[in-house]
Length: 298
Image (cartoon, rainbow, N blue to C red; front, top):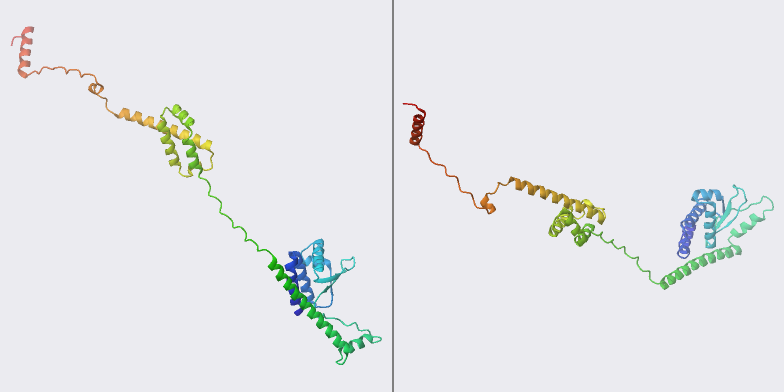
């Protein structure tokens, strides 16, 4: 697994400079996983159609991402044939990690078998040379990573400090439209004069009922969403209704009051008619006189 960790570390070091896209990142780690499953061979073959299907990318998108990764030095590849079955051969740069090789043994001659055996023999100087080269390559790779870390640290120190993102300001509160409409209506003298003339009311009555109208409607009232013209029209009909109600109430109050006397109207009171008081003796005397006049004898 050391191959995986070294390539993973190298990728993220380069990402600080290259800023790989999500497609490039997905393609790299997909190929890295394929190499890991195959046991880290020197190279492996993988068809483009299979790669595109597994990373969910178009052919052109996958090829563009692959070109970026190759230019970054993460791996190399060789194009296959034109058929769909012909795969592309990939080779990762392991930086000191010896990839697994499959010896090409030929049954005749035995030269390659002998060559391998000589490299693996303890006393062969070529083995030391090969091991020395591998060690040098590994140290060189570690030095490159150290230098890359140093360059990234220096470049980060030279960069100006990034200003924090501006804080989102709370939106201003919505204006109180009804208060604004009320102010505008109280300041509209021409409308007040025309309304007073139409309703046959005084200016003070108009101002008083404008205040009462907006008090009854409340902060938003029944006029939420209406324009100033709509509110003004509604206020006029409301005051007209209030005026008519007051007139009807005044008429009922006048009818319920008793008729005032003449003295209340300022005219002198008529003298009371004198009615004579008649007693019983007077009535009897009148009856007797009436009988005599008619010729009745008692």
